Every structure is written in C-alpha cells, then in structure tokens.
Length: 194
Length: 194
DNA sequence: ACGAGACTAGACAGGTCTGTCTGCTATCGT
DNA sequence: ACGATAGCAGACAGACCTGTCTAGTCTCGT
Image (cartoon, rainbow over all chains, first blue to last red; front, side):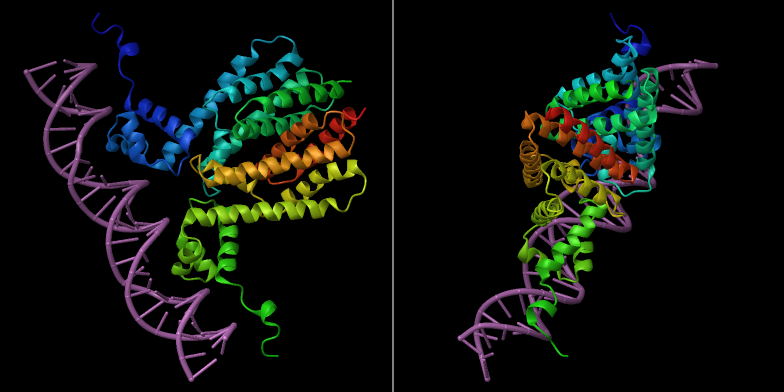
C-alpha cells in the first residue's frame, strides 16, 4: 500500500498543476484580475517553474484556452454519442449546453470572455476564432447529416442560438436560454428540411 | 465672432470630457487595460479633476455604463419610431442592431464585456442587470402589442436572439448574425400570433 | 553511487496602476 | 472688484504585477 503504479498515484507534474490552477482562476475571475502569484500559489508551484515551462503569462493564457478548446470538443462529441438520429444529434448540442449552463460554476464562453479583456491581434484571438470556426463546422456537418437543404445557412442560425444561449446562461444563471434555443432550433430544423 | 452663446460653444465640462474619453477607451479596449492616465490624457483633464468628480475608477466605470444604458434606450426607442405596425416595431429592434453591428467600432455588448472582466457583486453587475431587464421588458411590451399569445415566452426567445446577434456581430465583425436573428424572429412572431 | 534534470522558496528589479497632495490659473456671480 | 468655484499640471506614495535570479532539494536513470 505504499506507491501503486507510478503514473497514476504520482502527484501531477508542475505543468499540469499550473494548467489546472490557471483554468479555475482565469475562468472564474478573469485573466487580468488573476495575477501570477495567485496561480502559482494555488498550483503549489514555484514561480521559476511557471516561467521555465511557459515563458510568459500570455503563453499560459494561451495554453489555458487551448485546453478549454480541446475539452469542449471532447465533451461535446461525447455528449452527442448518446443520439443516433441525425436530428437528435443536432439538437443534442443544445442539450449539452443546457447541462453546462445549469452548472453553478458556469461563467459563459471562456473564449469570448478572454477576448473581451485583451487587446485584439494576439494569440487569444486566434484560439478564439479557431474555436468559433470549429463550432460552425460542427453545426454545418450536423445540419447536412440531418438533411437540411441549406446546411450553411442553418449552421449560421444555430450559431446565433448557441451564442445567445451561452450569454443567457451566464447572465441569468440558469439554463432557460439554452432550452429556449433548443426549441427554436427544433423549429428551424423542421422548416429547413421540409 | 468672438464667443457666441456660452452654453453651446463653450468647451464641455471636465466631467463630460472625462465621460466621453472613458466611453471611447473602455469600450474599445476594455476596462482593465485602460489606465486612468490614458483617460485623463485623452480627455485633456487633470487627474485631480477626475478624482474630485468621480472619486474612484470604479465610479467612472459605473458612470460610463450608465451612460451606455441611457444611450441605448434612446437610440433604440428612436429607431423604433420609424415603424407604425406593431410587428414591424418588434422586428425593428433587430434592424437597429444590424445597423449597430455593421458599424466598424462595434465591439459587442458593453455590459457583458464589462462584467466579463470584473469580479461579480459590484456596481457593474447591477447596471448590467438593469440593462438586461430593460431589454427583456421592451421585448415583452413589443410582443404583447404585436398580439403574441404568450408575450413573456416570446420575449425570452427574442432575448436569446438578441444576445446571439450581439456576440456574432462582435466575433465575426459583420451584421450577418443580426439579420439572421431578425429572420428567425419573424418566424417566431408568426407562430406566436397564430 | 552519482550526476542530470526538475522543482521549490523567495528575494529582487523595473514597470504600472490607483489615488493623494500641492500650487497655480481662469472664470463667474455678486 | 473680489471671493468662490472649477480646473490644470505634475510630483509623489504605496500597492501590485510580470519576469529574473540565486541557491538549495528531491528524484530518477544509469
């Protein structure tokens, strides 16, 4: 009962702890309001370790957002695997979003939030746009698979709904907006496949 | 040709110049990234004047947001006066939003942006919520006047569309999302008044 | 056993931020 | 004419933030 398998019981690396702490703090309180000292304190990591692995705060922010991007992709795709019917899969995006916005810690889209407090033209904008493009692409594929006559237009409409549901979830602190968005999406899907 | 009427040609008060400078800078670059020094420099105002009239940066931010709130109300209501038919008035909200998101300087909802970069529980959240409640109330009245059977639900749906169009306008830098939102709103209105 | 690499603790430098304080000037009402 | 008010210019204090550096510890592969 000493140390079991080294890879599972060992304390996570400084990089992983740093990323976990940055994720929690940056998402919950914003990037500018959270200083490096708070991140390393929560991570239990020396400041030199942060700068030797990431080089700068901006790079840490970038890694945080890329982690969010990856997590979002896997969670969304995993959530959609519950459904077989293409229409259900499309609407399932809003089901997943409803679950997410119902979570107490939900604070809106991390990419939009980050871009709202950082000057444009930087790495944040790039990751943000990549995430946005991925979302639109996912909706396009789902719309096409569901038999939409004009999947591109339907995808654009669904993006509007998704964004609105995300904002509503943050500001109103419930998932009502996401459920509304799902209902509207149902209507749009019905008329788009007539 | 010396000084005409004192109230019109005179240089605006320090307070007004401060508010104008804060509005431009805070909205364009964010609240945290813009320091007091930049604001007073653009306003052409001494630092002591800022602190004697507003007392703190947070209060200046609050005044900035309240100015935005007032401006938004007047602009929206003025924009709706072009329409007579209740349905056109409801959809007119999205027309106004489309014009706004087409403007080069558009950077999204100032209230959401501000709340994204400030810790909750402060004055920003209050003004933000007031603005949001006003929007919902406006949609409710417009929905009722347009003959919606369930104006509260329609208002909630329209809020989702409005938020989504605002986010889309900021991230995609065009007014496509607003026009999409208007089309969807047209559909929703049609089915809500059947 | 031992050397390399990863990590820790914390002092330190340089910059920036908010907010205060001291003088000085101009304008306006009475 | 003159006092009150508003405003300007800039130095200054104190806090905070990013990023660097030194020095010591721990762990692991060989």
